[in-house]
Image (cartoon, rainbow, N blue to C red; front, top):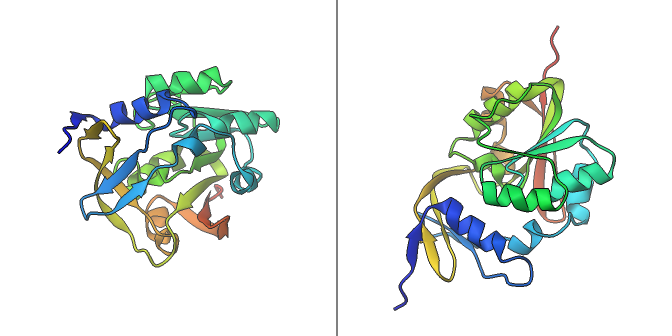
Amino acid sequence: MRSLSVADALTVYEDALRQGPTGLERLHAVGEDGSRRQLPIRRWLGTPDATEEAVLARARGPVLDVGCGAGRHVVALGQRGIEAMGVEVSSAVAAIARSRGAIVVEGSIFATPLLGNWATALLLDGNVGIGGDAAVLLRRVGELLQPGGQVLVELEPPASGPHTGRVRLESASAVSRWVPWHFVAADEIEGPAASAGLAVAERWTEGARWFAALRKERRR
């Protein structure tokens, strides 16, 4: 039976991305309920595909990419002439993003001082689950939006139900400690959005992935 080292989730995540697209090892997110999903490292390190380009076409600048990872969305928006910046908690991953030309601020979305004048915020790649409570995260993101601003969020398929719990990352050589996560289904986003003062303006599917646009009301 193989012996795996135990590390924090950020370290396992960083190690997987450092390998680059030519040296990928499999990385899985494993839930307390026994669920197991392979994480798309190659996609994270690549450039946006047609599905993501269609989502980015809905963005109005300036754009804040929350949990920007290796920065592919920030770079793609810049190539469209749209002002964009990423927020990334990992210094190592932020460095990867900067090496690709992305503007990135290091730190947690909850602790990093950010001016509240963004027209669009991105919560793609399941990042609405960060911290284990989508309503709390959306409330913070909503504070950073200008009136009439939007959040473009990626969701789980409908009928999969909302699920909160803990997940850990597993690679071939390491397993992480448990971290809280919130999986939000496309037909369950209204509750977290409303509690954050946001309205579901649109919900759609693109390339077998589910998304929604959440709007912040304009001041009257």
